[in-house]
Image 1 (tube, rainbow over the protein chains, first blue to last red):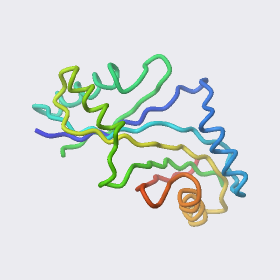
Image 2: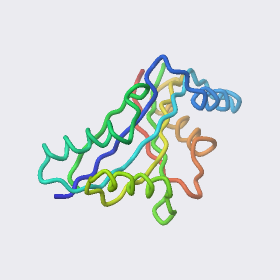
Image 3: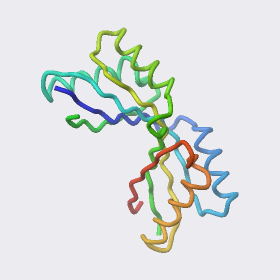
Length: 82
Length: 82
């Protein structure tokens, strides 16, 4: 079966996020009442797995081994059949 | 009122995505049956607006004016009260 996962990777709170800060500053410069921006990465991964439980396990592994840095990143994903 | 928007920015289909391709190749190298990866950016924006309709309009404007490049990017967002 084919699955699609949307993976969102963001810095753990406590880590400074210069890109987010710069984006917030730029939005304020344009006149928007922005309090805070956090910038993050997202991946849309299409992959094969034998069932949903296996797909969950696989995407979890991919996040830990390659897509995120568990020391400094938080991540979450949405999994659906493709 | 305070609102929080999650904005997801991805390349329009048709635009090549070298980062996604490299990520897919790396995941395959680790033994995962990955068909395709699309890499994208995400922003979590906390901002002030007088009501939900105004918040919708503001975040739409921020996307078009700064967060995305309408020529090459697709975007979507989820808006909620913060």
